[in-house]
Length: 453
Image (cartoon, rainbow, N blue to C red; front, side, top):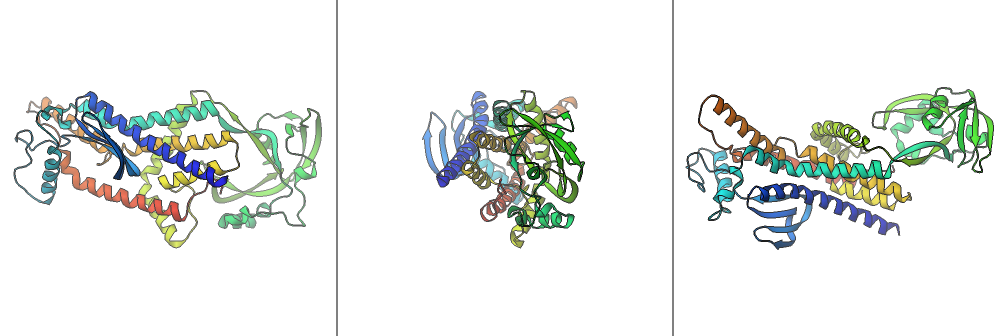
């Protein structure tokens, strides 16, 4: 059953990625057609065509490699200054100019009789920007929908004061500062943690606490949140506290518990362990988590926070991929915060569906993957470099700025910006993206990230 669930998870990831790509391209397709631009192809994926169907003037299809998609619009590049519509060039002045002319020639081969006024380059700046931003905005809409379903529909797992697990002893990797630091250097030690035969029982086990009971008070003060309990226990190692316990049958009792001293790693803002460890009180229980629905107002705030962190990660993406490549070559353990590809998303999705978790927890994790993916695609496509959408937006805005300056200075309209002149840069960016993607895909195959450690 587990392999079948894993395959279903991978399939869910494939469908989610394909849906995200397809709707992204719809975001380009719909305004392009609305503004009268002739669209010859709408494709999800790259490489060999798996399926296609031709409409009145557009071929719709799916290709074999689900790493992107495209909408082909005629007349993306204008003819040279002063040349009639459909002209290609007036001679070469260098390799880059020749590359630009060849691109214009290929673009104008699709411009048939009567299509001269249905070309992209003739559009106004606002219409160009609308078409090129349509794709990223669609990803933003998908992300907002997924985050709404996640936060408002399912809720956020929130630790309660109910006991999920009573640990039998203080884990050896938390018994001393040296042991805790050694566990950070070798995480497998913590994964294989067992209680030695001579290990004393944990404070919770000594006090007779059992899973399912609820801690309702500490030293006579009511507690209703897990953080209220940990604020007391973490700050009082070695102290004796009086716990108010509510059993599963509704009866209550009070027990004295002497807290042990445990060494734990300091967590960063993402909840991941740092290299620093600190001591604190140890009770020996884990909380039962319940999903608590959030107000709709939590969606923008959550998206903004994740967008800020994603933007910061995007700025350092080449460095992080280089570090990932170095770890891969050296055989080092992979940083759980390293980038993942669509292959990694598929593996994580399969791992989630195959895990022994409640259905609600699985749905929440899958939705968070879909939401995070689309939010990243939104930000990534805004990067002002060709061949990304942001590069075309930058070209359109530059065109508008040139026209505005010319009008203010009383000069003739300089005409549309020829983005084909930036093709060398676009090819360099494309090759770089392929190289970065290849490294991440290879890492996802050889040394994948696991949600469950």
